[in-house]
Image (cartoon, rainbow, N blue to C red):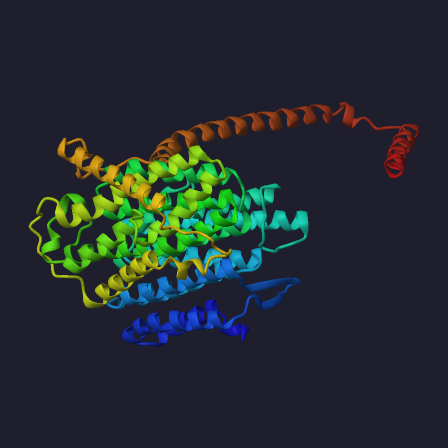
Length: 562
């Protein structure tokens, strides 16, 4: 039974892929998530797929309510991604997708740190091929940067694992807390994958560089696996509250001025992760329920937005806001699905984001984090502006670009419609989602105060956007390169490297010259002492030799006594 664990099903399917035709591989991407989901539901709560390796007990499947909800949404995301990418016949992308999804599901099911590390690195290696699949020099360079950062996250996890094991003798993946150097290293490793501030630019760099379908797949797994890992290992760690609050705010500025709509969505993804991190930091049952619920909903509506923009990119060859507009005329289904995703991410009542984000906002207020609550409210208004309005407006309704592309292919429309339906159903019937949450839920999102407060916020943000557009104050959609913290390692560090290398070379040369001079002086001194008649050339008497031997024996005796 253990060999039928969902991650193993995905890995086995990936091994079979090279033996199948391209069409059968596409079919496999639909079958495997269904089989994996059925397999997941067949396991009872507890530890499964336990193997003893080199004296360690590795638990590849720990099923409880927290791991279950993440595994369910990962399975749904894998299925929707398979439908959306039906037209792909690239075996590299198909194999990478199976390994990536399977490793992500394995990561949230891992019951020990060693198993987690194995899946952690598997997601890094598999996902980079979704970037390299564009087969361009730019995507190769982006993929290398992405891989370096993802592997660095794994190295920190491994180093922390070893130190933690040395301190405690345990590899269990339970609550860790910031109690030692090892747990700090693990925390930073999780933070890199979760795109903490100043560690975040790999996300905006890599996701828009992936293939049309690859970006949809990437948006679902890596960062949410990191959110799960934080919820499992660091729930209630207060520093996460403030890290998350910063994460919700700083992407707003970059998303507003960004022209590439897939990069806008990447910044928006970073913003939404901040809400989840705040929930983990608060650590109460309501907050952790909010984190799990928001991760569930976020995977769906973010995938829907990436699907919509991806369909536009697929048909027009561009995702630049300055080159789009007026596409509602020929892509109405894609437009409607995009609007559903925009309403969901903006937390409009009757859409999925409203029933999940409210849990985190209420948890922050009830635990007296009023400044953080205010930051989340401001961030919510910003989300409406850059994702709820900007994405659909500049794609479908702004200046007429003159482009008249065909509607998205049928399979893309099926994937988008199915995702949109889920976003609406969760918003209307939140009880089904709440039943999956880690803790019992006694929460009613549709109260008069909740709905009125949210609608006031949304109306204010909408009016602010209209005012800025009418007055010409909204950042124009123009071609440009926006500098972010990745400038430090992509431009500044390479620019300083020649100077640093030159300075080090000068120092090394000076040290070499000093060493040569010292050795030459020593040789000359020894030659002087060993010349005929010199100190080393004089023969010693028997008495002197006996004295020297006696002194040496006394020294040895003293060392042995000590």
